[in-house]
Image (cartoon, rainbow, N blue to C red; front, side):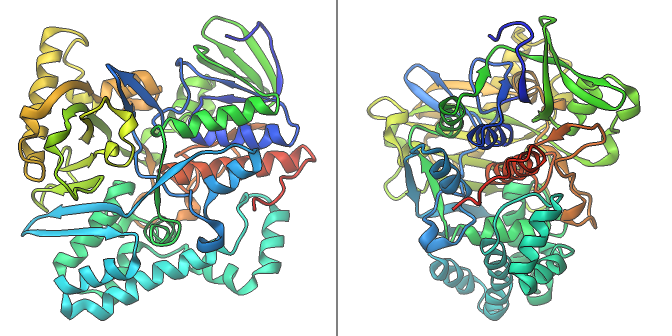
Length: 507
């Protein structure tokens, strides 16, 4: 808890990765920060929790951004941020990003080795071999452009002029590519409908949208970087990332206040000057960063109705039903990959519960479970409305969770036979759980761009209220840990220049 009326240069609402990244980088520059978090732990959906000797990832489990700069360019934000903070985060490389299990017996691992992945895909679709290489080559081009440019705010004119002067041709190329979608680009080169479905699930696996609705720039980051920086799992689980950011904040004199929920952003005459907590205490700052969703920020924390953001201004991504399972290690066969996506029917893959996401992180880090045990983390999309008729904690609610989870487990046995009999610990989280613990509107994965919108139409870090800034998945570039990390870097870059202490380039 923090003392009454404690103040700082910058207050951060919520300890999601975007807000923590901004706070750590600002604090390193000597700009004092104060982070308020409602829970007892940091990280939001990129956190860890423990039950009976198991350490589970609360959400995210596929991590970009930890590659070697000397090999993979400069998109490796985690590597560069933690180097700047002088904090060590150990990781374990994963040879496969995701193993897809799709209808018609179509299964393909997306290997770190780019040639192995493309050859596997071309073996399934030999008539599309040239198109496959051309399409994924387009993603590599985006990656190459982005990896040559320093991270910074698109609202910072000084930064943009500097980048444009140093990389004029690449800046123009990136601007043109920002108007293109992943799906339309794929259709330039590929015509096989089953292969185009695979391109859709490649997008859906992280963006929860099909390829036509996914900006090409986002795809270039995620689907190219897996072959350069690769997928690297933090030792100790996803919570190691926020723990390291918090360590960096404290190292340079910043504060993180747990069990300190923000009730209101204080605004006077169109300008914010601090926050009020649920305990009634007020805390003041020259700037406030909200890590909440755009709906939570302007429809709950800002009480002035003039700033209200209608739900339909953006597409709202669904929430999740998650299963955290402790299992006997014998159920995981030799050679089984860590991350899987399972689609039973293309007609329902993008419907609620239609796609199963699955991971077994103890394959990489056995320390997450007791000896002889593994973790299985499975989740599907869901909505609060499906559960709100049930009283939380009631027998009916608990029975409904058990029944729903049993259905997901039964479907998962397609790739992991005997799972149901190997389970020794079960923890379930409904969309209501996400809404309650993460303070997210309807437990949502966040706002998505509507079809036809380009990535530059995603909200940036500034808002309609002076000195109120935003970070996280409601801002550019969007969903995913590496994306919200970028939003935090961007937000810190803009604020630091505003304070006259511009960030050094992350090297």
